[in-house]
Amino acid sequence: MDRYLLVDSKTKKVVLPLPPLLPTILIKTITNTIFTQFHPPTITYFSAPVLCTVSAGLRSALVIDIGWHETVITPIYELRVIGGLVGAAGRTKRAGKILRKKTVEILENMLVEKGIEGKKLKENHVEELVQRVVWCEGYEVRKRERELRRKTDRSKSPTPGISLPGISASTKPTFSTAGPATMLIPLITTDSHKPLSINVPLSTLSLPVEHAFFEATTSSESLYGGGEPDQDELPLPQLLYSSLLACHIDVRAACLSRIVIVGGPSNIAGLKKRILDELRALIAENGGWNTVKAAQNTRARKKGASPIVVEGGGERPPPPPPKDSVPPPPPPPKFPDKPLKTFPPESVKEDVKEEYAEEHTNIFGSHDRIRRYKELEERENAKPIQPPGLIRGVKSLGTWAGGSVVAGARVKGICEVEREKFLSAVASGGMGLPSNML
Image (cartoon, rainbow, N blue to C red; front, side, top):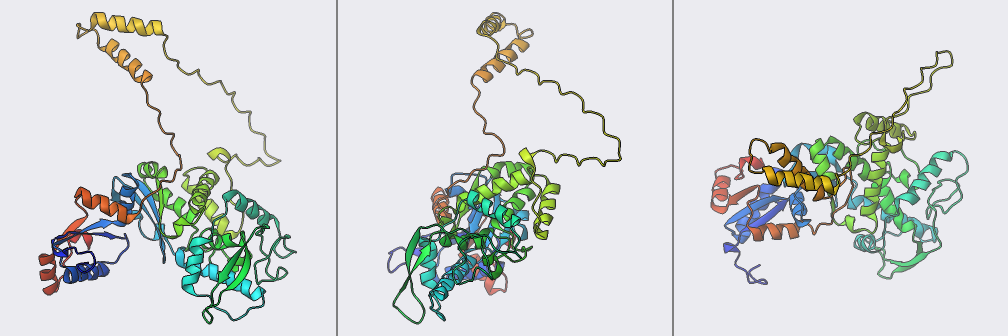
């Protein structure tokens, strides 16, 4: 810092963004390293999801951080982390590491299909391919494939289509349909610097995202349409729905229309839209935020059956009565709804205004007329209200942009640690961190 940036770190305060699940011993180690190497006077700690919310221009949001080892979903309400919902309910290992693993499996299978066996791809090259050519397919296309998979018996002949590269269609069928469009991709192996160029269908490049984030299991059998549903690592849409279902109704209403998706893998083309579309389908499938229906559909997915779809988010229709029972009485007639109240005509408005003008001096007799006049003014100047339950994604500039904004505004963070107090506490055998961080 003092060699290349020519900045004196001894006079600069440090803003440190922290993930919600970072262990305390790591926070102590990082703090000790910064104080002993750069000698800043103080370190201010902020929560990383809160900084993502600030950089999006919001105060409340549901932050989905798709990282390398794990994906963490954190609800933020009025710039405060809802701590009880951070942990097992909003955490999964479906992240960038599994995405790269699935990409390596598919590309190596294609090399085997071309007759090139025993080749391993370079990790940094695969990571670049994930960032540049891997994409996410739309929800409607995958929905049709899921319906076709449920109707097809896996023990019988597979549905005609393009099988996974390197796998015989007669032994391990897949149900993804490859289009005619292909892309020439150079692959660099570990034992050679000369790239191997192969033609890869564009639909095949969407399979890693599908199997890493949306399939029922992340095992190798998921590449062939099989495998039992994973009960611990839920798909991202299901985990997102469970996190919203666990939120308080006020927090859920504030976060539903402010979903922020950040992280390196979130920049894959089509991933954000696919997550939001899957969430809308889950809400419609479970009939809204009904905990009982959500639990029934979860058990149905684990057993391999199709979930119960509730049309329009209403109640499930009653089961048909048995043949031997007496038929129930006919339902009562439905009366038409009352007509909506319309605004009073201009003549009524003028009469109210004239009466208010005549009696505005009479304090004891004009309260009702003043109230009626204010109601008319509020109706005329009413602002459009956002409909409840609107699912919307919001773009964020990231953690570092939010930290820059907060540091420039000189906002007080979670806690602030001074260098002298920290080093003296560590020397005496303590942690040196405030009690609200332990």
